[in-house]
Length: 133
Image 1 (cartoon, helix red, strand yellow):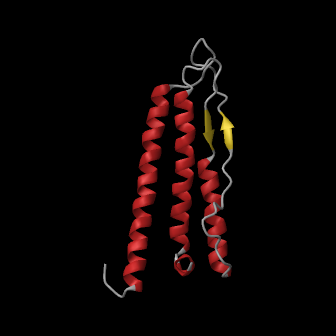
Image 2 (image 1 turned 120 degrees about the vertical axis):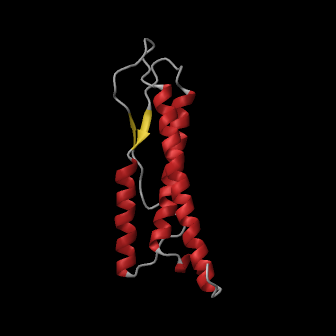
Image 3 (image 1 turned 180 degrees about the vertical axis):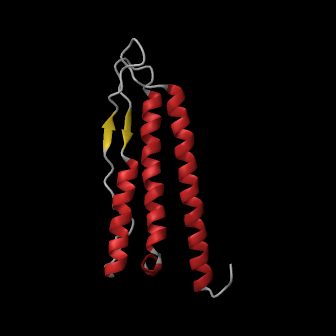
């Protein structure tokens, strides 16, 4: 519990980014799993706006000295159904190549957030134990 209090807001923001990219990954896999479902419309999430809202909330909390919520997502992701025209005769608008590319980009985003978060946690642990990284 004490460790949660000393984690900087930037590390919390990185955790938020990891959570949101994980959620988006699940949506992408849902789209891929339904690529052959007649009439299926792909779904996506308004990721950038949600991360921006989370950033503003965390910065506001840091500046006001309010306690951070631990473990709870600060942003509400908005899932939407893509209204692009159908790509195939069965009424589906899922493009498997596009979904695979989105999955790769999303995985890269997650890895960047995770690596930066790991670096911050190592610095905090080093500071607590008074060792240099």
